[in-house]
Image (cartoon, rainbow, N blue to C red; front, side, top):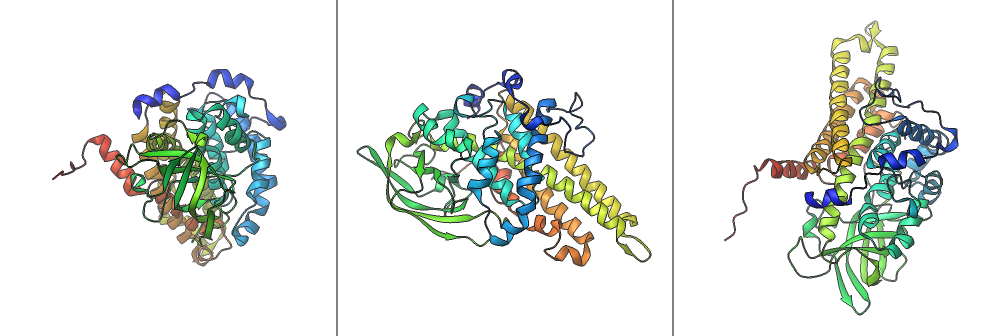
Length: 429
């Protein structure tokens, strides 16, 4: 893993920067309220180009997304094709993907800037689905796929013409990726796929899936491959839309495969390398998730300050109670610590380092801090916090997934322990 990482990291920052057009006459004013985000030399990893990118994305969020979020949450689905087309046209679905397939060809820090800005969407489901499209279902394809495969699947995904999903988890294997059962058996020029996938984000709307399946009976870390699987193929059954406690606007599907014939040319990279590719893909997914939670937490704390300042009990604003303003100070401190860890991991990553340990730490902290912050803030909203009329209660439900999805807290801890060399050795009889 680590040795490979350095090889495929495109260090395109310098080259790409000059090329990036300021779409829609975007101003370089940052949307983050943090003092350091002045769009000049005062930010650790973002330049004026990063802030220009964020400012132009903010316009789309304010005009095309946020006004409809409540409706989509109620309907239990958002129009992915429509939203992705808007984002794709503006270049936001392939920020760090190669220019020849419609990407902007920038380094991963630009993807992080976009992930952060997407946190200004007033729900968790829509940014999550966008992240799957831009940074979770496509990194392996972009790095290891053949030219033909990238033309057929990557280019339209970056353009927002098709919706992608990622097929890793199964009913019996979520965080334990090596334990998946779905098989893809080579027959002639095809792979015949049988099995099923679970918790598939955008699964009801997707046009293709980046599928992880067992292509041989070898050892579990060397018998898997990634395939591009068109969802319209005969034998693909979207069994049900899963009813979740949060992330309501994002459809999540259970999917079955019954003798689905996938052309063997749809294999991403080499057969048997799927597990390794997926682990590399996870690195970016986890950094994306940690970066994406920064703005929601910042916004929620600010809205809680505003609410508790004007809401009075016992003849004074709730905010004036030391327990309230001290708690909000603690949470803000934790948030800034998380932000620093995310930026440090990203800075090391774009220089070609293996950041699996730091990315796992950031993802772990993000999930735990989201739970702690939403719980504390909801408490300060009192009865209003227990209604569906305020952002804090939606965040309380939506962000709970962060400690479960993309590798649970417990898996993050195991990875960290592996790097610390503190895991007990497996006993082989």
